[in-house]
Length: 339
Ligand code: PEP
Ligand code: MN
Image (tube, rainbow, N blue to C red; front, top):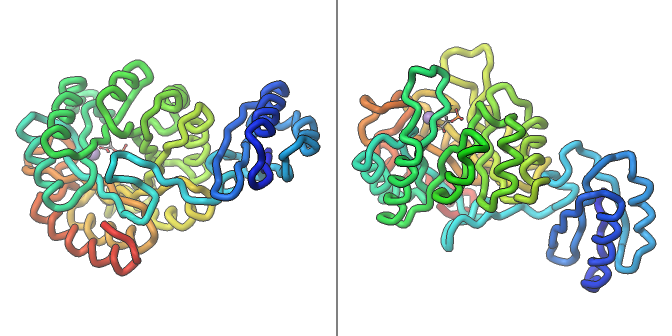
């Protein structure tokens, strides 16, 4: 249920409503709006008539049910787009189209520093790089782990770029969060509910990828796991789904952008690298994503893709990324946004 407070309701009225919600065994999530605050009361649907009675409390405007199964992620609870601040000059979900770029995996100091310098020069805002790699084969490169995180931190110190990196299990999540600016939940883990709850308890923004066989509703339910634990900073990422098509690694579902925008206040970014699996298709899909309203992109860029430890075939060389960024700037400006 959503408890809508009157415009300008007093703090003591809000506190009383929060106390009553908790007494009824519900979790209360306050969302501050521009004119009024609303409270999402989340819990067992069976107690909703008790919640309805709170309508008589001082300062309460009205109480409305949340129709969608995802609650805190829905536009019903929060109508304004969420803008997630990453650093002083980078925020995802506003008028700036945010570009995250870098290699699939951190391989060495030289490789991650060269990547960071190159993507920064081309205009990227955030560095990407995997230190823990969830590979399909146990025999493939599994990542440099904590050493990789240290190298990412070094690249951040040198370039000023915040970084996003994947977290693959609850045991290492806190350690990754000590280094990273954004925690990535990969496609293979996006319904790992123990991991979703864990990152929900941490105070770092989360980039939640859509699983390769996940519906949009399921993606929003995974976001709900994170938000309901108290972390509202969730960025959704479409990275391609499995279809019968084999010409591309995955089928990049760009329609997910307007569909999600009609259902959630959370920002939506596109991963054209995993979405297509082929560096030739990355730039066209990036332009299309921005035209369709994506809040950002996460793109694999590698200084030497032929010798990459993972995902070389879909990684752009720095010069190609630079050209793509120049053209992307035109599409972004045509849409009245900035890059
Ligand atoms: C990655 O970003 O390198 C990655 C493994 O992505 P996904 O989880 O989308 O496959
Ligand atoms: Mn990859």
